[in-house]
Structures are given as C-alpha cells and as structure tokens.
View 1 (tube, rainbow, N blue to C red):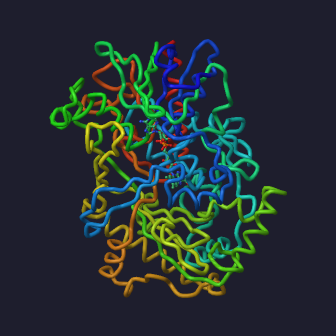
View 2 (view 1 turned 180 degrees about the vertical axis):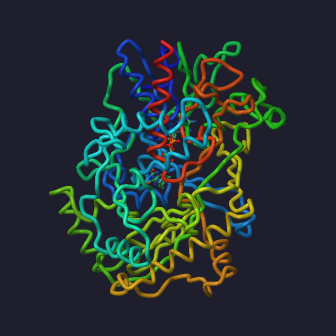
View 3 (view 1 turned 90 degrees about the vertical axis):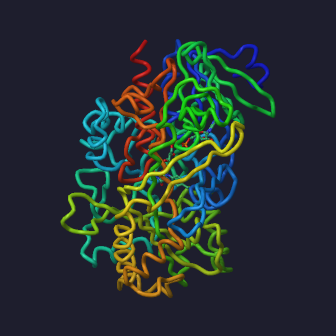
Length: 533
Ligand SMILES: Cc1cc2nc3c(=O)[nH]c(=O)nc-3n(C[C@H](O)[C@H](O)[C@H](O)COP(=O)(O)OP(=O)(O)OC[C@H]3O[C@@H](n4cnc5c(N)ncnc54)[C@H](O)[C@@H]3O)c2cc1C
C-alpha cells in the first residue's frame, strides 16, 4: 500500500477509485477488491479507526457530541425552530458514520423500496443484497442471511430498564415485535445491533481486511473529480496539506455521504449551473437536482430523571459502576459497555387506520440532552420519537468554492404542512408510554417537560428542542427521469465513468435506520460495477 500523497501523484493508478470510507464506500471497495485481477483505492478524509471509542460500543458517547471521528456539522438556522441551528454528526473516520452510529440494524419496509419506482431496486430485487451482506446470529430465514460480512446480533447484555420500557409500551396496547426486519415492522421490542463479540461491526471492520489489491488511504480528502472530456479519470485530494492525484482506469465511485457526495459533485462542476458559475466553478454538467431533495428524520427526545444505577449517568455511584463494567468488558466483552444506548424501541402508527407505522421510537438508557452535548448530573433515560415519512425537503449547497469548506446544509425541517402534526401525535404517545406503571420504580420527573399535553404545547416543545435522528438522504437522487442525478445503475447523468453510492441516492428516505440500507446500496453498486466487466 502506498503511504504518501506525493507518491500517489507519480504512481497512483488503480482500476477503481472510491471516495469515502463509510457505510457504502467500504462495501464498494471491499467487494470490488474481491476481484483479484482489479486494483482499488479507497480515499477517506478521516483517520484510521484506531480509537477505542469506535470499537467499544459504549464509546459512541465520546464521538457523537464531539469532533472526535466526527465532522460535527451544523445546519443553517431553521425557520421552524425559531432560527435555532441543527446539529449533524457524521463519521469522519474509516467506517464513516457506521463507526459512530448507534448500531441499530433495521431496513425499513418493502413498500419503501417499491415506492422508489426505480427498475432493479424493488424490495424483491434489493432483499438479496441485504441478505448477502448479513450474518445474522439468529440464523437464516426468508428475511435474513448468514455468512455475510456484516454481523447482526442481539444485545449481549440487555438493560433491565429497557425491558421495563418494552413492558410499558405493551401495557399501552402496542404489540411486541422481536424482529423489525421480518414479516411485520410494527411493534415494540429490542433492536438487533451490528456488533460482533461485543464489539462494533462497522462497515470497515466488516469489509476491509487488508486486501493487497486495495489501497486504503486515510486522512485524504477528495477535492475534485478529474475528467478527460466527459469521462471521469481520477480524483484530486489533499493529504498532509499537499495536493495529490489518483487516477482511475475504469471508474470513480463517490460514497462521501448525503452532505459531501453532492458537495464533491458540485466542486467537480456537476450541479446547478448558475450557482456553480457564481462561485467561479466551471460547469461540466448542469444538473439542478444535485444537493436537492434532502430528507431526514426529525426527532423529539422526552427526558426523565432517575435514581437507577442501571441507567448511564454522572454520579459517584455511576462512575464506580462503569469502572467495574470496564473490567468486565475487558474480561468477557459483556456488560454495560456493550450497550448501543438505544437498546429498545420500535415502529408505531399514530392512527390505527394507517397502513404502515409512521413513527419510530428509540429508548435510550441515559439522558440525551441536545445530542448528549449538554451534560447533566445524575442518571436518567430518554425516549426519542421521530416521524418516518416527512414531506419536508431541504438542500445541500456550496458555501464556497473552497473544497475544504463545509457544505451549507439546510434540512428545512417542518417546512411541509403535516409533518409537525404527525410528530405532535408521536410525542403524545411517547410520553404516555413513559408514564406507564412498568417504569414507575425507576422514573422521576420529566425534564424540560412541555407545559401541558395540548397540541400547541407539544408543538412548542418540538420547535424548541427537536433535531435530526441522523438519517440525511436523497441529495443525489436516483431515478429514471432525466432530471435525476444518477440513473438506475447509479451512474451520474451527463458524464461517464462516475457513480454515486451512499445514502444520497435514495429517491425517498426509507422508514427506519439507514446504515443497513447504505450497506445494501454498496453491495448493489459493487455488483452493478462488476457486471460491466
Ligand atoms: C450519530 C449517528 C447515529 C446513527 N445511528 C444509526 C443506527 O443506530 N442505525 C442505523 O442504521 N443508522 C444509524 N445512523 C445512520 C447511518 O449510520 C448512516 O445513514 C450511514 O452510515 C450513512 O452511510 P453513507 O455511506 O451514506 O455515509 P457515511 O457512512 O457517512 O460515509 C461517508 C464517508 O465519506 C467520508 N468523506 C466525506 N467527504 C469526503 C471527501 N471529500 N474525501 C474523502 N472522504 C470523504 C466521510 O469522512 C465518511 O467516512 C446514525 C448516524 C449517526 C451520525
């Protein structure tokens, strides 16, 4: 493997160059490298995944609220939030967001993929790629695979308070569900997680194994796709403050995520022509939809104080417990440090007449105030509730032509009528579940409680505190129409030799967590690329 950027500028030529070592990019690079006759370079802006905060599941508490392995983006001020800016953590490390996420394994529902209406991407056609990726420790069935690189496990040491939450939801009449990726999504239960032997199974851990025909270049931020005529022939990147170039004999695949894939396309002259022109970027292909169609799951968190030391918190008792749990983890890879925090939850309908669940819940065994950026003394628990099918659409645009500048992210949360009403109903259900008897022994006061249960009070609380549950998608929309950014084979329209594969290609955000769908997109991308040989 080559080690420095200057060397690349002289000798870096590969069959494939993949930009972004995240959930999808690691899969694309790892699968393409299975062809021993091909050479692959994977460029990742962040460092190697050496941090223990990546591998020990509970370490996510150190990455999500900080800049450690995290781009930690901020959004534009949101009108619906009274000008408050949202926070958007994104993995900046090998493994990408799969290295800092909550490890929940869900896929959405078949109707999500059928609703994309893109040939080759119906549920029936994508299910084999979910299964090919998966090694579900429960075994194989019609819905699940074994033998794939992505390990899917039950939590090794489920938290007793999360069990109480499940009981409380059942007492409210919601069905128990032990497999959200099976025949029915609706219900409440424990999530399965992308862990193996009590450690995180990121896309990097699953798919990158030091293959000798795969050069993994970290701390390398792509600044531009290079073209000869209309054909992509390589990527320019920055490493150690120096500019370098890697050439692609066959294809360049951009997998930089929902914010940075459109950014890189725009920096390369593919995007809304007038906007690029005004920044002095020469327009290669006027593609007005690049960066548009940004969708995300908006989430409200109900917070409750507790005295239970089973819950993570800041106290002397909590510190002593964590110290003991650290020893247990080192010895057995079990216990509290294997938690993904959002252990339980599920998918519910705010109206029984609905055909599908329209809200998702995440029960977290600690206080998540402002993405855990605000620390509180004491222990507590949180119930997240998000709306699964928002109609609001935002956009990603360039703030500047400087490739190292951050993109401008404007989710326009709650801009579509109807989104707020659905979330209000969800928050009401969440607080009703949390008021249940099963949680009474561990529950103290609700923190930052809405002033009452009226629609107006819940809407006010949402506007004051709601934010992303980390599923931005849609900004390089796939479609069969000429206006879409990529076609059904993920090829960027208007140029040759360039594909996009990551959350950005989703025409519509799926109704669940987005890591497994991005892994599926990576699997399908690699298969499409290999089928052209
Ligand atoms: C805090 C958090 C919690 C989450 N929890 C869950 C969960 O529990 N379950 C779940 O299913 N989903 C979860 N998600 C969502 C899920 O992880 C993401 O949707 C998914 O990882 C996105 O995959 P991706 O391939 O689109 O992008 P990413 O995984 O974000 O990968 C993009 C990669 O590209 C790199 N990159 C960007 N720009 C450049 C450049 N110019 N040059 C080189 N490299 C570049 C980035 O550093 C990054 O490594 C969570 C996300 C976050 C942030």
